[in-house]
Each structure stands twice: as C-alpha cells, then as structure tokens.
Image 1 (cartoon, chains in turn green, yellow, orange, cyan):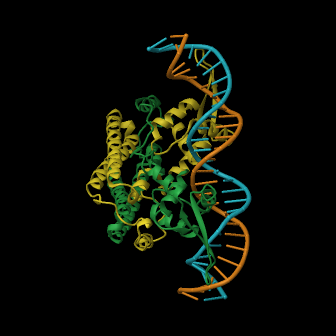
Image 2 (image 1 turned 60 degrees about the vertical axis):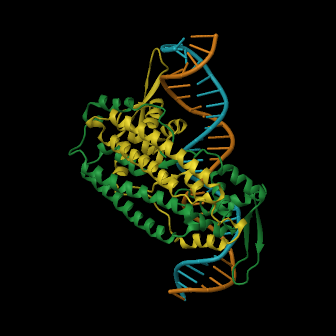
Image 3 (image 1 turned 120 degrees about the horizontal axis):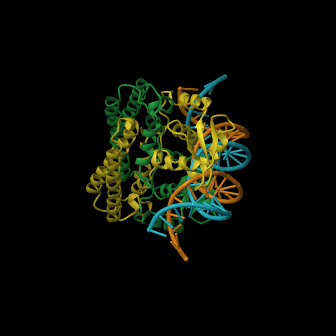
Length: 204
Length: 204
DNA sequence: AAACCCATGTAAACGGTTACATGATTAT
DNA sequence: ATAATCATGTAACCGTTTACATGGGTTT
C-alpha cells in the first residue's frame, strides 16, 4: 500500500473508473493535499490488479477509444478499510519554499521580503476565493466529507493571507546583522542551539 | 540547484558548519517546512563542492573525530541570492494523510471519523504548545525571520485545531449513501464533475 | 557496562515527475 | 485547419528515505 494506492483505492470506492478518469478525479478531488500524477495512476493500476485489489473490465466504445474501467475487489475494499480505520492521522509532509525564503530574510533587502510577502498574500487570497466557490458548489449532503477538506484548505489559505499581512507589518526596518559577512555570527549560532532537536513530526 | 541545496546553502550562509552540524541545524531550523535528511546533506555537500559553491576545510580535533567545516564560496553566495531574490514564492507541496481519510469519510462509521478528528486536534494543540515555547526562545531581534516562520506554523496548527473541532461538531449523524455498494452513485459522480479541473497550484 | 554522541559516509530502494509516443474523434 | 479531448501507456530521471557501516569518545 503506497500513498498513491490509498488515494486510488479510495476514489475507486466512490465510483468505478478508467485510468483516465481516475487521473482527473484525483487531480480535481484530492490533488491539493494528495497529488497523484497521471503516469502514477496507470502504473499503480497495473500493479494493483495482479495483487487482486482492483479489477479492470474492458469497455468497448464506438466513437471513443476503448477503455478499461476499474472497480475495487473485495480484497481491495478490505485493504482500503483497514487503512482508513486506524486512528493514526499519519505524518503530514510539507514543503513551503516561501518559508525558506523568509527564514533567510537577513540576506535580502527588507523591501524585497515585503514584496514576497505581498505575493504570498495575493496568492492565498486568490486561492481562498476559488475554494469558496467550490464550497458553494459542494452544497449537497453527499459531499459532506469533501466539503470538510475544502473547508480545511480554505481556512489554511485565509490564515496564510492574514499571517503574510501581519508579517509584513512587523518586518524589521533595516537589514539584520546575522550575516557572517558583517560579523557577530555567535548570535546566529545561538539561534540554532536555542531550537531544541527532535523537532520532527507533523504540523497538523 | 535542487531543493536540498537551497536549504544547505541558506544555512551555510548563516554559519559555516560540518555536515553533521548541518544535518542537525536543518532538522531543527527548517525541518518542519523543508525536510532534509542526513544522507542528503552529505550527498549534496559532495556535489556542491566540485561545483564551487561550497568549500570544506578539514579541522583536526583531539577528543572528537576530525571534521570538515563547509563555508559558502562567492559563487555559492551568488547562487543563493539569485534564488532568494526572485519574487516567485514557489509552489508549496502538501501531503496530508488525515485529509484523505476525512475525504473518504463515507466508508467509515461516523464515530470513528469523530475520533480521528479529535486525534488531529490533539496533535495540533500539542504542536502549538511546542511552537509557542519556541517563539519565546526566539525572542531576539536577530531571530526575527526565524520567528516569522515559527509564527506561521503556529497559526497553521491553531487553525487546524479549530477546524477539527468545528468539523467534529458538523459531522453528519449517520452514514451517507455515496457508497456504490448501497446504490445511487450518480450523485457521487456529480461530486467530481462539479469540481472544476485545473485545480493545481499552491495553497499558499 | 551500556547507551548515546560525534562524525562521515555508502547502497539500495522508493515514490514521484516529466517528457515522450500514439491515434482517433470532436469542438472551435 | 487547428486545437483540444479521450485513452493508454513507456522511459528516464530526480529527489528522498531507510538501512547499513564504522569507530573513538563521553555520559549515565
């Protein structure tokens, strides 16, 4: 059970689909917090089928290329449910390039940092709008759980926008001096030592 | 310039360090939003040195194994700054297992979802506490930018906790029926079609 | 005496992305 | 005419993780 197969089995548990449809559904429905690429979908399906977790049925079409529609087998359902039912939320993985840039803010002119924060805010606000539109569309009892995930992302986007604004307002007025090129790197070293190790684990 | 090298060059721009110290500094300072493993540190260093971006100097030690302390070269500083100064915040990458579980909530008894949300909330709160302690420690003008990143993570943790609470309160009372095993998967299909494609891009 | 810290790496596997390839049909 | 859609895949590469390996010194 790789991360990609969890998503694929999960989506197939909602509706049987072809690889092509799966790739699109993954992108649309879970791509924001669980990316699955097209190639991976096909690769996973040809791995999962001999394992007996999914089963494809060839569907002949006239005006479209034939396709193979995959459904979960009983073993597939069992595998999915056994993962879903563990109470471990799993370790979230993040990679936020803009945070690294901020962290290294001492190297850049304060004006640039402000500009970057503004860009972060702009993108977060744009995304929040998108997500709000989505929320409206998902106003159906059957979409209750999907709506919760969108709501989570919306709150994150809003929080990001608010943080960027506050951060921009609290920016130090000039360059700070931890750059070793301008002396006193002892304080900088203290910055690392201050931070306790064993910092790993999830944000969420 | 791989993601890992950006982090490594950035950390070396603060203080020259050995690979060993780098690995720990990476973990402590940026590991939450920019994971870099120990092996990767050593691999990157031996890749970056022949490129002329960093330069190691052997330091003999008596009571400890000898070590090689790496510092940025001028070309290394240039490479780092050219990345830092682009206004593109970069595409954030997420993988949040618990959100996929929520998304697939229809397969699980509502009670279990509630339990999982509570676990999510508990972890988020625990992390928020850790981060608050860190914030206190980083109360020094030289750590202004580091503090901003911690503040971001803190807000995220708080928002996560709040969302989990709200979500738990708004959970549908019984199983919802989009499971194809109990009919009416047409509504489920609509869930996907409703979500517009081209959903990719960053949350932040 | 055992466990951990310092210090440096190697090897193998893994998960994932990007680009490439093909070809019919339908919409602009 | 051109572009996009439907449909399925392959190949190569990339970045990352995990486990293994070694060995002296320090702390408990």
